[in-house]
Length: 346
Image (cartoon, rainbow, N blue to C red; front, side):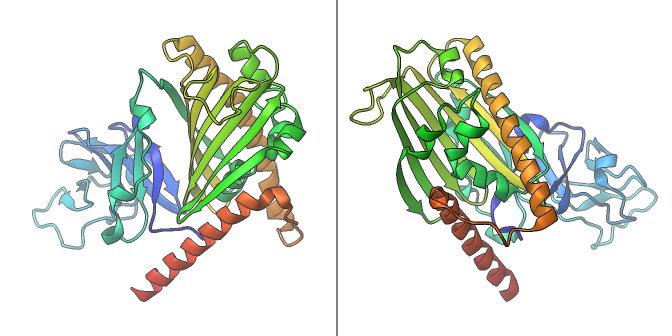
């Protein structure tokens, strides 16, 4: 089940043009496109005449034109033209979805339209600050559920095992990291401190350290699928009194997990360079290093999904390092239950 009354990332804003694009979100077929004015829109991907997918049509001056019989729909889903007749039946319309363009994303609301409040959208202003936080972004289609990918980001003890050649480092540094956790209504925030640790390969390729380093990772999970991350590192001893204002290496990551189906999802992510922002080569290198690590995540989580689909989850065991992940799951389960009650009451 999915949380319906919530904002999901439907696409990066620069993914969508006047050419219609099909994307399945929460098990529903959606067509995304920009109209003649450049406004982004999202409609159910099915013409109300004979059921043809609208993404097989094209954008014209009045809206999106069905590629089967030429019916045209505006961004609200209303049919505005039927070739060969003047009268347009009231029922000639398709479902439209609230869509908001913000911080480089297109956010979609899959639930009750009356409850779609743009003020609830996760704010990510760093995408708008190219001077101090230049960024690059992409999307990976993942053959695993969105929740499995969120699980992966809530328990970072896997870094030393999965990402040894990139962002990981010594496994026990991650297992024994000092954790500070704050629970929120929509998820949680946690900080991991790894003081006096050996720098991982990604870090040593980026900057010169004197020897061992202090590392900090700050995460915020906001249901249903946003994770905001700040990672920083400096020479050992630098974080004795907490995070400094400027570290030798610091970068931000946005992780957005949007369900496609029960067992597949879209992983929208970005890297923002905050330690050498004037150097485009550093921004590019950071993106490449993180991309290599995330492809490692993709491989293991897709394999995990395949095994869980085959054998189920009943024999799985929780361990101490699952604490943040378990709280995340309880938050999502609560929101799904609330969502279901509201839908049943309508």
